[in-house]
Image 1 (cartoon, rainbow, N blue to C red):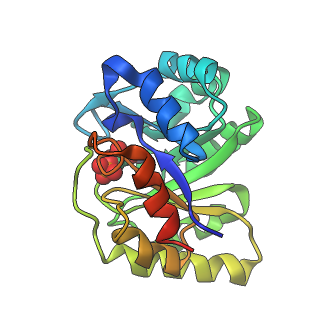
Image 2: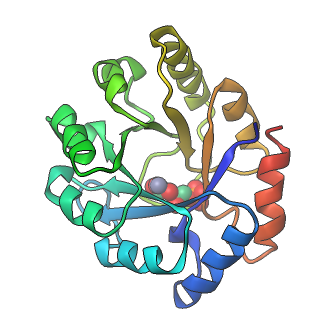
Length: 218
Ligand code: DX5
Ligand code: ZN
């Protein structure tokens, strides 16, 4: 099955968000990736829960919320109530990753654990049974438009092996520097969902770009 595509609204045209969302949705992208940044865990600031509520009103896409915030427990209820379908929390952002994932599940939302490029896969082994999705960052989080880090492919492979060893079903998502070239190795390694920001929203034919990501992963 071709990879599921998750356009990142971080790279969309902020004055025409609804239009951009409709374009990628009609092109067959399944998820809408919403980056939340607190200016602490990552240097920048982006998208509060009010935006999730807004996106919920205009699209049926799966709202895939990536919390790049310190101590994400503080925000889980708010983002769950706003209509998130998946909430992702960074392993590095809390001493209580297990509790954070429990909170997401208790709120009736799909739970995702996220690891930075410098974080080993084995560290999340104790929580893999709880998650619906694992996000393996393929750049250091905080900004769009960075270059895909090829050393992350090995981690995707390791995670995919662990997944089958443990008999688990979670999706494996990649985020950062994804395009129709970089997606190939990640897909072969076991990635099932691809976030794409600057590649899709650089104003040159986003529909063809969604198709290219699908074509590259058949
Ligand atoms: C980066 C964000 C990404 C970002 C990806 O910290 O988590 O979701 O939008 O952007 P590209 O695809 O341009 O690397
Ligand atoms: Zn992201």
